[in-house]
Length: 293
Ligand SMILES: Nc1nc2c(ncn2[C@@H]2O[C@H](COP(=O)(O)OP(=O)(O)OP(=O)(O)O)[C@@H](O)[C@H]2O)c(=O)[nH]1
Ligand SMILES: [Mg+2]
Ligand SMILES: [Zn+2]
View 1 (cartoon, rainbow, N blue to C red):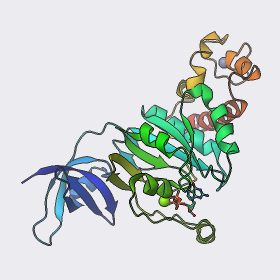
View 2 (view 1 turned 120 degrees about the vertical axis):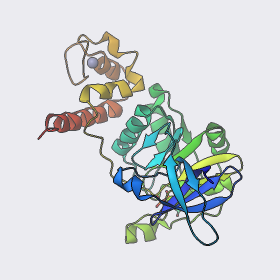
View 3 (view 1 turned 30 degrees about the vertical axis):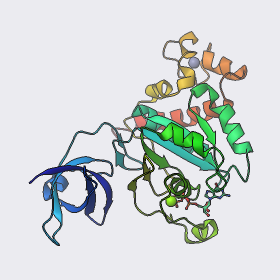
């Protein structure tokens, strides 16, 4: 008997799949997946043969994915909640790379600035820097509750995935939203041990929300195939302005008559965003020119 379900966790070569009735099945992937170079991902909709008694069952087939994210490696999410906080020190280049991944996959995005009980200035700074992108920036506090109702409303109806550096409070936010008992890290211990508290990706469902908790990370490479000239299409705040650049394929990298540069000087585009765009552009140009080397 073949059934359908969704992968909610994968660890040590075993996948937990939840069927439509809410029953969880532990499965092993058929060798065929490995031979074909296919990695089942949390979020995947699959066909499977359930196990008998104590035996695990078999993952038979992965159904077509509506989105695929490489970092974190998940399938079929519809919204990425990029989480930052005053501690650990925010990495805005990482934030912009995550945004590029999300927009490339047509995902909805929310910036959740957590720990706003400690400090509101980061949330204010980011709200101003990302205003022209149209992406919602929320000041939230998982421990004191500010902004949590707004976050919940933005999450409704989506398959949400939290992503961001280790220690920003992704699991604490999810625990507060869902009422589930998740393992929360102690930040000083984390720095000492240098590893994440959340070790595996899992899809959680409670209080009407669907949400993926993921381990934090701080390294992220843009894919080599991402063409440098395509980058500018992934900056929502450039879209109305760049048609006024003197050159049609202006890369907004100090070309004469660049309307984006002018907009930045007039304060209509955030200077930090443009600067980081240029950093990423240079990186992609470097990768692109070496791509056959
Ligand atoms: N002051 C304050 N501390 C918070 C808040 N949210 C989380 N923390 C603390 O931040 C630390 C890290 O929280 P986690 O939820 O484990 O962080 P994480 O992002 O899930 O980390 P990884 O699982 O390693 O990726 C814990 O000590 C939390 O208590 C908040 O809103 N305010
Ligand atoms: Mg965590
Ligand atoms: Zn330009």
